Length: 422
Image (tube, rainbow, N blue to C red; front, side):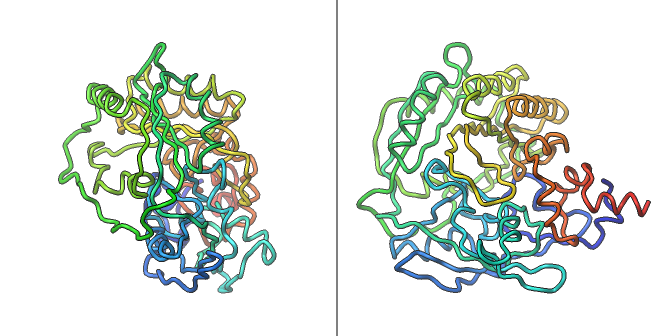
């Protein structure tokens, strides 16, 4: 799909810009900054139901609800995402095995469409539009406000257990029990390790501590990367040293009580951390593959990166549970999800990412769209074979660079319009 005719004048809501790809960009049209809309409308301290405008940050929701003993049922890896963005991307967290994705906890929302009408959406009212908007990447209109149900917690602190494992086989043997016994579970992987140590790492699990703070911490970074280095500092020698040092420091069974910021949002504590990847930036690749093939596919993905001579600074592996999202399109689904971060080295990195796509799709898996900036239309269609259902509900005045690059090339409505105009 070409830009120009079909996309000129198109709109897209913009949250806080924490997506890694182009799902929140609209280079041929305009974006609407939602951050000024940041009012908490209401909160029920008995039930944990909070209603807020779409520009409210999750950090603000945490601070508002924590003194009453509530916490969002699902949080992603940063608290600096807007409520509207969390819904539009149907984000997931470290407890999908218990709580599903963010969309599972949305009770209702208010949506503004380009016809000038405001729609009240829920499972009982305008249900098709409700399900399309959750995980709809902002393409059904502008989310003005939403009500979500928080979960009751004893404290914000996390009773954390760190358990080392020597290879991926050991991790898979531990993963199901970790999910059964804990609210949260996620693994850090040494992507550089090969041979009998392939996939060695640390399994971090935790539950909200019975006794701890109910006061939200200030969401300010305590460290920073003060300047942009001329090239990436995250090269293979550095990564090998880092992985060895990290494993040596934490590579034994430990139990401790951690603050929620450290447990959920470690990168929020380092301002401008992305500068470490150099001026060309980074690509993130997140895939999910069915549980039945994970023991073969996850090692293949790690091996592909090693064979390409590319190191991932942050490599995360976790297990998704069986709870389905109400969204038409949702990345999180039963299986195992692997996240890899690579410095952008141009063609070499793009070729590796295409190979990771190929391995994922061949295994019956999917690639995460809101962390992507280059997947092909074919990879998207294989990941989300029901994409036409969202296209049918998309507001014709709304478009993103991601949707134009993928669904548009597959024959979306604006693609047809552009061809007719040409």
